[in-house]
Length: 178
Image (cartoon, rainbow, N blue to C red; front, top):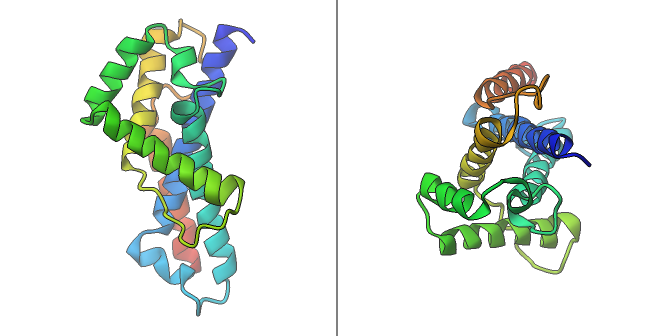
């Protein structure tokens, strides 16, 4: 696979993370939570849809930032991995130990409840604020420092607009069904 193709795929994974995060968070808004309540006639659909969006966020994030064996992990994509990691940690305002703990939380959710349904009695749903910031940083770094003109043609060069569009779309659907 060419470098251009790998960069494009990473941008697609970032976009997929952003889209699913927007859909997930829209469903968790207080005004939309009645759709997830047991008394709602279509509660199963709304719960599965919302949970699937969370699951995809975790899967995409692990591909991008947690699993060194993944083809799209930042350490195999960026030109200066040490510099990138230092800048990422600074941007996130955390140290490496805190970032490793976040990776552990995301991997545990993926491994214990998503990829396998292990015997752990409690599912700990990961907070996604750091995950979002990390994906936004990775994406911006690729667009600004790694891609050449034309490499990302047809793909989003920033995530906020797409995120807002997906959030708006989800809210409209949730509101029609509340």
